[in-house]
Length: 372
Ligand code: MN
Ligand code: MN
Ligand code: MN
Image (cartoon, rainbow, N blue to C red; front, side, top):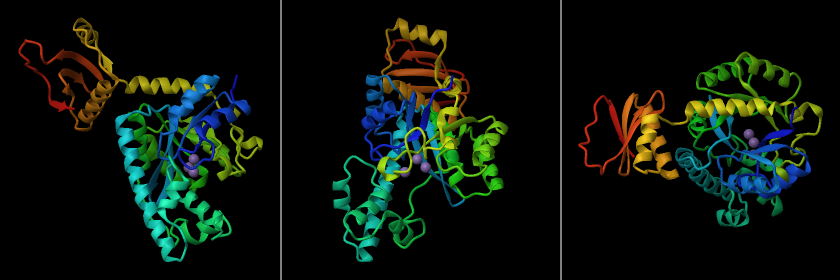
């Protein structure tokens, strides 16, 4: 049986108007079995959504939508089933945020130079605990009666390339795939219909993304037109990609898009997705990414009554990731007073020991070490 799910949804943590908790209530009202919270460049709404979902028996998938750039075009990559606390993901998202804040300051300055009454302080005061972005600026100018509608603000001032527009820090979509993977998630190419790319350009990009490990593509999307859905389905089939889809719900910021059903016509209904299939592939991916402990290593930890804290496990994992980036095959990874020998390509901890043990600590057969 197919369930109705929506794998692309925004909350007030980015530029949506529903709080994560309100989204859960709305999803229940719409009869969804699950939805993924995929805010722009932040996971700040995820824990609230997960808690609300748990309380009301609705599955919430932790996600994110990363902005990237490919040959001058802004490309979005959605991460599903990510681990929000992942250290590297958090660090990268913080970089995006810093950059966006600086960018807002610069755009506000340019708008002031054009004669608009707008200050960054006011903008942040009106939009607390949010990734303030261009829609917030546009809404401010409209609400304060300085421009007649949001579209005009974008078309004349802050749209891409317009006179008050400022560029921002971006990664490539391939880097986004890697970032999502190391945070335990599935990487999905978002809304291919929006990139205004010719089919041959899109195919070339998808091939690069597939080489980087892309897992899926948003085949079902609110703004698909003409043969879009059919074409994206055949691309997904050709490259063995998961079919994903979602409404890209933003609340009243995009009032014509509804949770679960997009624009309300059958072509964008997300009920055609196989949720089970997505879950299964998620398991396959996380198995291949997860750090495993050999029997010997597990026994040693057990005998010494060593329990790794969540924070230590994450550091160990990020140490293995670093070793892998440096091409180390057998690595010593030191976390606090613990030492691990890891077979990096197999992502397996071969042995573990406490450095305070009285034995001589002589490690042979390693070709690198990471102290983290
Ligand atoms: Mn948005
Ligand atoms: Mn997007
Ligand atoms: Mn979106």
